[in-house]
Length: 205
Ligand SMILES: N[C@@H](CCC(=O)N[C@@H](CS)C(=O)NCC(=O)O)C(=O)O
Image (cartoon, rainbow, N blue to C red; front, side):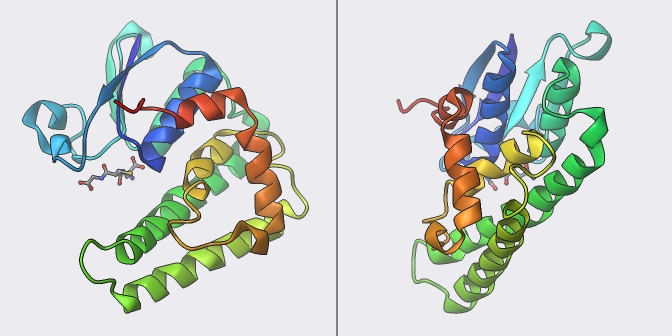
């Protein structure tokens, strides 16, 4: 049984979607990042970066336990463990779009959320800068999806990594109607049972 340390955020949900897609049994540990639980000394032993998500797999490589942080690396690990959603024949295409998510979509949308949903006064410079960058990234995805069903030739960890971020489109003030090909991709993925299940993790307590 894999232990998943997570919270109700896009980076956490990438991993719960992947675990659901692969049919791997897992146990959810809620790390409430609004309460600072990500900085608890016990948790830092699993994730030295003090963020979610993390996993501990007692059956890691060579049968030995492994603890992992960084959602992109965890997706690659789970894909290689199960042989799912990261086929060798599309490996570099998938990696390219996975890195686009890890280095672009995630950090930029995350910053847009920070500035647009700031607890005190909204900071217009930050909202504009990251809001514009978010829209630019939607443009890149929209052009790609105008001629491609998925990021790579088939559904892969690149799609799994990006879906939970696009699911927060209202948070970064993007109207999917302006990006019809992203909307088609988003709606199609949302119909997958594993995506719906993974998006509901952690369960509301
Ligand atoms: N690059 C990391 C980013 C992880 C990340 O930023 N997690 C956020 C939630 S989505 C977090 O734990 N934030 C708490 C904090 O920064 O203190 C990954 O993909 O795993």
